[in-house]
Image (cartoon, rainbow, N blue to C red):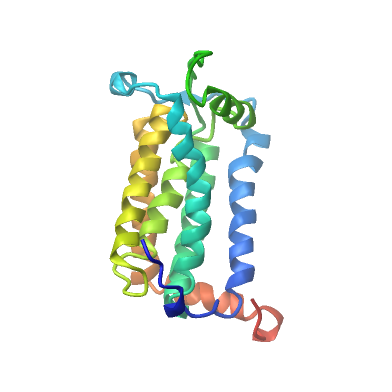
Length: 226
């Protein structure tokens, strides 16, 4: 899975700041909305089909690995030319805004199982359960980010075909892991993947990416910065 780093260009102007803004905005969307919805009624969207998915605590390894996958692919996606970078960043911002609305308008929750004491990586999953309350599920940000990570490098010759294939498989594996760790249900996963693709297409086909880039470049009089 050679990444061919010599083919990548530098970060386009202002994208470093935009990446930092994207991280901050995700924190606001995911954690900040809980300040408002903590006492609200939450909906449970699990179905009988979700109950048929096996509970596999060891798949928390994939769930946690997603964070490293995002870091790598977010950087890859914004180093393939300015147009591509701003399309990716605009798609990310659009998707998180949709998630913000969904978390406020349709608060969701999940009932988690008891982790068997002897389960492989059960301690790690228990830590995730402790740090991450079982709400703000629909759509899954884990799945949205992972799908966008694949879309952002899809079809790009700068990235090896093997790594592009790995990124698709990783995105799908992350979706499965959210189910087998009981962090999400099928509706959350499907919505996260669909939202990722929809935002990627809209950012490229509507000029949203170009507008978003101009918006950031106007900061400080449009001077170069990363």
